Amino acid sequence: MVKASFKPVPPDQRIRELRKEFKDLGKAEPSAETTQRLAAFTRAAHDERMLNMVMHAGQRCLDEDSKAPAALVAAYTPASRDVEEQIRGWLDLVDLGRWLDRKDLQQLGQKEAEKTAREWVKKADAAEARHRLRTIGSALGREFADNLRDALR
Image (cartoon, rainbow, N blue to C red; front, side, top):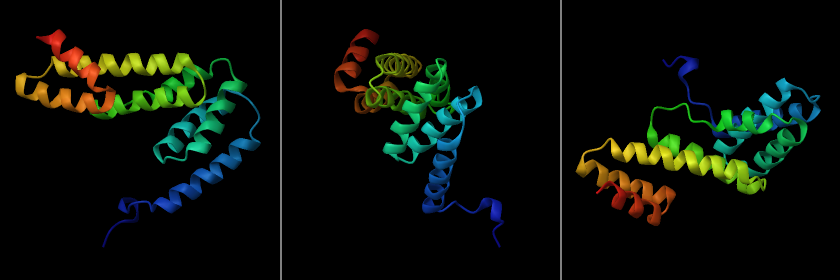
């Protein structure tokens, strides 16, 4: 018998929960707490690829609080030790910045993704570095990976 706490959450249940939270956030008064909730919601909706909600919540977050960019950056800052997940998190921030027409978020996400990628490749031996460069080429573009490879030679 499987304990209830270990059962996977059905995707449709997660979507229903996000929709309910989105409605609740729509009724919330602007405050620092609401900004934090909107930023966290934006990230959670992004993970579920609910892009309309991502854009609406992200824009509302930015409109209501001057400190919102920092809250969004914190929400998108990857906590994982997996470097590939970290790079994907930063690239998700780039996407959010593009969707909301925020160059500051795009530039920060791109800079951090590239910095993380450089450090990751530098720490590898030659064979592993080739594998990592292929991964980085898929995520950040072939030109970036080629330039990184040439710089490390």
